[in-house]
Image (tube, rainbow, N blue to C red):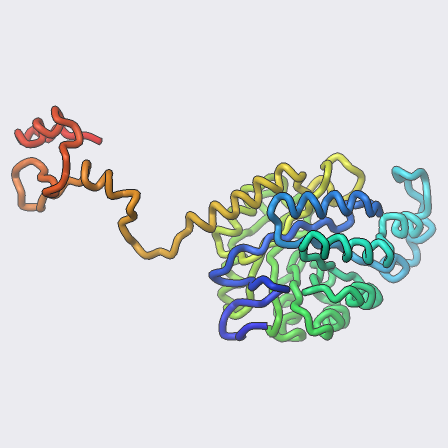
Length: 329
């Protein structure tokens, strides 16, 4: 944990916050559909595209599924089954997470999870993750938030489907130490008109010592690029092998080719934003020596050139010296 006077938090070996490289999270979530093999392919894909971390969603089906829905039958890719059995089918086991932990450690890939119940916190904590994530649905579950915060790890809290008063209450309950907030809209996929990306600036102004990020559920990449330009210090996007796969999050996910473009674009944005201090770059020197015009407001003649400047175009330069105003480039 870093000083609370700056909007920075350490996650593993990375510092996340103002002035740091954007922390890019590939959310695998439940897009693995209960398959460890699919989960591994997504981990490897996220690593190959340059993401900083992968994230899963961990639930205890019996704790997170309303009792009245347990016996409701539904069609699934595995045939017709009770809803509680379906929830168990798409959930990775403790053994699966042990395999994921070994796989990520071997690849040098950071992984963590959003936990939907206290039992899941205990399971994930056994693997010593560098941080936790609270889903937007859990923002008003202060007991669950407290269980994740009590591990002593940084906690990322998404703010979708929430009022400003609810966000204020969650922050008050948690305190700002080791806290990160993610602007989000909980629609899958989310329409552009409901993304409200300026909330990133609102959250930054309200909690200047808390790193603010963006968890996007839109189709396409442009809004996430805009989020980085508006100051998001970390971004999270769902990732999938194929957007046509079974699952409620697949349509709002990014396939691996898109994830590669996303990370590359974010790094270009970081490089292009600069520091806001005007300077003349070495790459401009050639154009400066050939093209720079110098003329005072009181001058009635044509433009003059710096002593070391070559004529940018002999005909245009001659015309300019005759005072007829013809000069281009």
